[in-house]
Length: 153
Image (cartoon, rainbow, N blue to C red):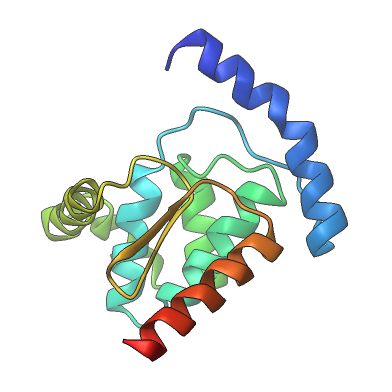
């Protein structure tokens, strides 16, 4: 990542923290910047296969955004897996399972096909792409516009 982009992102963190607190009532304690979240994505694929995907995702997001944990740390992921009731021995094996690796790669490839190059990004109705962190009021407005347009189509 270019140093100027990293500096801009880091400089915007106080505003992000304030927005989260003021608009959503959430206190952020953000994890380390610049980590590689691929292992967490692989872990999530396993959790989904076990019917625990939503709980695992929520716990990973909370660990990173509210508990300042490094979600590229295998020990952190093992703790999260235990929290959501995943069998630790199978979870550890799944982290190096090529099937889950391939599923993550397929998701990333699909994101590029959609033109996604920012986090967060949201796709509505498989044809409307929103990129970047937007305030709730703007997201709501966009969803309402899509609903009106799709309802009229």
